[in-house]
Image (cartoon, rainbow, N blue to C red; front, side, top):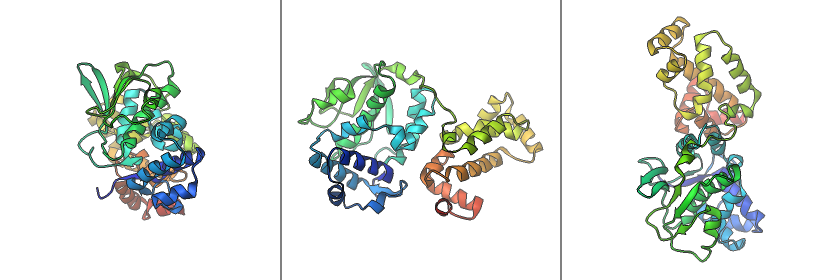
Length: 334
């Protein structure tokens, strides 16, 4: 990757929060070298160096050295990033963690974690740890904000659940060290070998409050109406589409799994779809196209790409041009 970046939307959220603490917006932007136009589109990518500069300037101007801890404490993930909504659509915390790892690049894209998930579960003799494998040595706030996001969202939604048992941070003990156990809600060890939270293992199976497998229907009535019509469909294609809609964003769209959900063998599903003049891949492709058109009415190109199951926005753009002859960005702007 040529340059580490953060999403324009997340940059704006940190900027707005820092301004709410009393910092001057124009002075903050001047310190980063970023213009309002550079992050007006939430799909825009802002250099991580500018995000770091925003943290540094915000700490000084707002007089808040613990800005990286206060930011997740005062903001709700689902309100500043669609990744939060994606995580809330999972059934359990373990499922949400899986989706967070899949979609984390929508928020921050950095080097160093291409060989596996950014947030990795590590069983050890002393317990189960959740490690943040992102390492930017001169920017510890990046990891601290991520780990604090876990603890703050848990405290917000599950105040009676003991999630974190201990926290390890690689950074040396800072002057504001007393803030860390308050936000991370556990004893903190500084100068550790890794950045990780020791967690309660039962957290993985904790059911998410009111999980909404069709969370993305909330953006418009079309998706909900389509889903309801498909659920009552007598055709095999309709039944397949009804099963695929709530799974599109997960990327877990294997024909074998869909066949099993229908109580069929893969070969039987193949024959039934063929009798209706379609293949499984065609059903999936057309459904992605239909849902993409819907999501682009209110969501960004990158968000839409991930929601219809593409791991890369560039692959989605190529598919959309194949479907429509136009780029998704031009369709959204039009």
